[in-house]
Length: 439
Ligand SMILES: *[C@@H]1O[C@H](CO)[C@@H](O)[C@H](O)[C@H]1NC(C)=O
Ligand SMILES: *[C@@H]1O[C@H](CO)[C@@H](O)[C@H](O)[C@H]1NC(C)=O
Ligand SMILES: *[C@@H]1O[C@H](CO)[C@@H](O)[C@H](O)[C@H]1NC(C)=O
Ligand SMILES: *[C@@H]1O[C@H](CO)[C@@H](O)[C@H](O)[C@H]1NC(C)=O
Ligand SMILES: *[C@@H]1O[C@H](CO)[C@@H](O)[C@H](O)[C@H]1NC(C)=O
Ligand SMILES: *[C@@H]1O[C@H](CO)[C@@H](O)[C@H](O)[C@H]1NC(C)=O
Image (cartoon, rainbow, N blue to C red; front, side, top):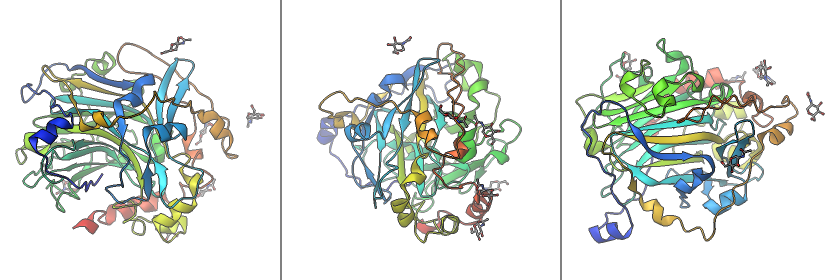
């Protein structure tokens, strides 16, 4: 997520009044051994850990970010319930019924902030994949940090894609003076830029990981329709003062230490999709005091800018991204996140801080989140076989384990044939410099 947040330099007094407390980080630079749970965003309390950002999209998307109350009342947020396991996943969708120049969506920011010495494990069952969409799961410097983005704590995007692309672009945006190593054996993806301040931070250093970039360790799709068809995956991010790495695991084949709720990354045998490391960067100053953001915008500084070059204009036969997003609400029915859990584990001595967003939570009353029945919705699709919910819980303490529902998500893209041109689009995206517009 390219984030051009207008940043104010805050005085210490204002800083304090915003209620931000810093995370505690007394860990050694390379924590060894296991981590323990310090934040658990799952189940019925999932949304209580977030506040809504309702300002204009800093990335200039054709979107209106609504409040927590409005999102729940309109069914943009809710829970997908699995009776077999009596578990609920968070649903984060958008308006898929109205024609609107600024499609309604949500941008959730965590009420806690974090520093190096954490493992963030996100069990993502489904993610938006649609022309015009620009969804992301990412970490961003807390608002009260001094300086101008990306010098105010930096940014790390661990899951991000646009349109129907089938790869995840993991990206670090930092202050000048942070350059990462391109050690091809250290990660599976392909490094686009080594300088994390490329394009004044707008491009950053980015690693694209397609499933076909795999070494031998993963056959998982990293994003897009294939990611959804396989039931998503479990993204695990290891952030130390030596850098940050992102792994993708099959939910049904997780490392035993993750299943046990005691992740020990040094025991993981697979190669991460991305690893940002090396002596060319001071990670302590480049990434600090980050909040976790979940958002889904449309068009704007990335998806909008590559509308032509990505092939989306040709595939949709629509001249502009804005026009497509405005006039095709049903194309966004399947453009939702379904998240089983986000769990954050800290090394010894690590605890979360309280983010500026904690003070923003001004909901007058408890919010009633609707139950989202994906089966009913699927039945509205004539080309969709009757879906069934097939939870195969292999429950143990720690991670939520249910198998993704047996929905055929590739059939769920409204009534459009989104697979028609994906190969060509991917090829063109790789060949074009997606970020050159910012240079
Ligand atoms: C399902 O879980 C909820 C809360 O987690 C609990 O209140 C309820 O009793 C459970 N229902 C069953 C049938 O176990
Ligand atoms: C990193 O190395 C790979 C493999 O040699 C290469 O394809 C890629 O262009 C390199 N990236 C950068 C930024 O140099
Ligand atoms: C796919 O998109 C390209 C433009 O990117 C277009 O030239 C081509 O005709 C399209 N192919 C199909 C099968 O729609
Ligand atoms: C789908 O479910 C409906 C209602 O349960 C049933 O009438 C219909 O025959 C089913 N369709 C298929 C293809 O199984
Ligand atoms: C999902 O689609 C595949 C073909 O892509 C088909 O073989 C399978 O039976 C479908 N599953 C369901 C539950 O409809
Ligand atoms: C989708 O488009 C592809 C490529 O144009 C075509 O082969 C396929 O039959 C289409 N599928 C449907 C359901 O229209």
